Length: 440
Ligand code: HEC
Ligand code: HEC
Image (tube, rainbow, N blue to C red; front, side, top):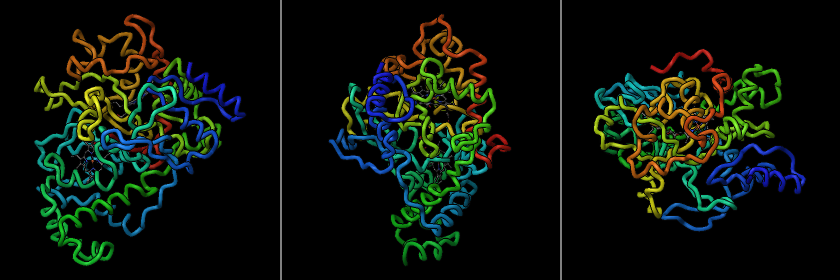
């Protein structure tokens, strides 16, 4: 279908390579892929077409492999220190690292349970599974893009699983103040705490005199420092076995892992690469981030153990909350959508999906294989897509392979195939985590 058409077009243009992405309903790959194929992806700037609500729509996708300015080493050093300083919470004892532990791929639960983390007040549990922060620097700010043959523009990028924060700096200020996280409450309280624990000199050296006496500037400087740290190579080392393979070490992957990679890419089997993007031609690992930063509604089962879910009327609606805040038309059509995460370091995680409903990688992969063929395994006797209100279940993607089969049909991946994909995903683990223990 569209995949073949694009390949034809590329062949006519005499461009190298095979198509990596494939059939997708709101697909947008054409321009992205052409840019990559032309080797111009990093250089080509986007032009603004219009605004949808107050979100820009561009004429091209923002290439993940775009050049990113290297962060200032002095800010990185301060940011690293702030990131794991557990005096910056109320009560003391919680830092960013409590939920994003550098030793476990920047994930963690801080003693929380069932897929959500505890805040500095231990009884206050969060609402979502803390995402891994490795490679987060590549997430572009929220924007729309419409592919040639897509019926409508689709959103990409934005931090947080619902895209509500545009920059790492803006994002980093939120947990500092949030009551279920570090709980400092106000910018004034955060500034007072930064002064009290001895950051005056370090902040003034980098951000000017009096910076910690002005709460707004203080919190902005905190964000800028943490952002620099999160943008450092420490969080994007690209030294997994898969990266060795990309760079030409053909023996880096075992036969089973190679089989898993083939299934991952095959549009008729895993079809994973249609959303978890992987380049087939580029040895630049930043072109294989295992996400297109797009949004999808997968209809993952409700995690009934989450404290918030004891209220049957409570639903985590994901992207439509952001859609409302940005005044997009028909915001409810985005309910249930979450940003496609990178799968780099995914094997280091212990909980999967935005609501942490799965506690093994195999189960997460298996979900794709049998969600549509044996729904009862995931939803019991109840309705499918039970983590969305009945009126919004129609938003869930039922068109993309492998989730488009009929109940009772043979799944697109066998149990052996699932094992191979899981083995392949294990090759995406950065060197430092290969012996990591599960997140506490
Ligand atoms: C109590 C646990 C907890 C603490 C403490 C915490 N986070 Fe998070 N973090 C989360 C959760 C949960 C999410 C996902 C939230 C969402 O999507 O609504 C998240 C999301 C993020 C993201 C977005 C990642 C992405 O892919 O979009 C970044 C960046 C981040 N946190 C950085 C930080 C920083 C910096 C700090 C310290 C100032 C911090 N976090 C403290 C739990 C925590
Ligand atoms: C249609 C787009 C799409 C396709 C196809 C797809 N994924 Fe995903 N994937 C997503 C989105 C979106 C999420 C986040 C969903 C959520 O949290 O509700 C996700 C989440 C995941 C997660 C959990 C990651 C985490 O950190 O919690 C894993 C593992 C995963 N996908 C693996 C795969 C594999 C393996 C395949 C192929 C069999 C695949 N995906 C196919 C879009 C897709």
